[in-house]
Image (cartoon, rainbow, N blue to C red):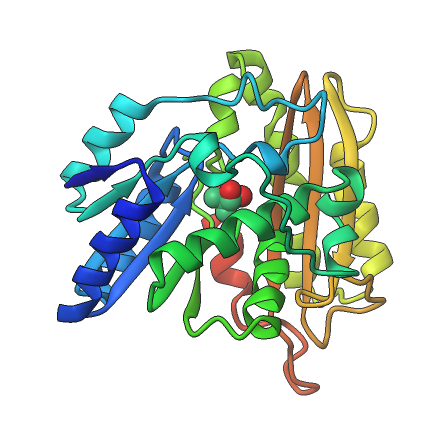
Amino acid sequence: MKIISTVREMQAACRSLRKTGSLGLAPTMGALHDGHLSLVRRAKAENDAVAVSIFVNPAQFAPGEDYDTYPRRLAEDCAKLEAAGVDLLFAPSVEQMYPSGAASFVEVAGLGDRLDGASRPGHFRGVATVVAKLFHIVDPDRAYFGQKDAAQVAVLRAMVRGLHFPLQLVVCPIVREPSGLAMSSRNLKLSAAEKDRALALSRALQAAARLLGNGETRAAALRAAMLSHLSGQDGVRLDYAEVVHPETLLPVADTRQGALLAVAAWVGQTRLIDNLLVEASSVEHPRTASMPEQIEEMHV
Ligand code: PAF
């Protein structure tokens, strides 16, 4: 695996790889877990070469957020990516990605202010900007993201469409710990007690999944079920529990046309997110086809 830290060198290395075949990119902020490695595996299966980026992007953290304490594990990450057969690792400095005087940003108006964008103003402007930069530097055929960041997926899909990036955005399923907790680099910041409390998020979704499995489609009922696990829990502070359209991120009243059940909460000092995607169901079969599997995966 070649490790590259400058934009120029990365552009040249990617150009040379693309001459002989397809190139997949998995953008990350490092502290890699099995969720990230599932992106890498999928990228390897679908492309001739794979690039991974590790960059803790200051532009997506507001002042007072956890930019300084975000986990950084470069040596361990390199070993994992080497073992996974990655061809290029791009690990640039902040100065490389944001040279002084850089004043160009990408904003996905509307979408960028919903869900996490509402709780973290400017977050998706930072995400869209850095991902657009990475797409220009790497010019991948396919780019891989995790479904755990469902609002990010909606914002990036809109960006790819709106700015005509000639690539396929591939979204990979959430990977969970055996307890049901969605894998996240921020889980490294949780104490053992906080890890237990963090299960409130997946349990909230499991409760909604059970209702969906019994034919409930009303957003209000599903939201109430989620809130019962996230409100008033010791050490857990609700950010949001919403039932929204997966692409517009606007609230829906009913899940029959498909919906995203999304939750966010603070566990101690750490903000965590999780979600459940509900596919559109037909009138004859009000239960969504994928629900039983999702329930099983979520260890209900
Ligand atoms: O999902 C992440 O890890 C980050 O938001 C991303 C896409 C790498 C942009 O910094």
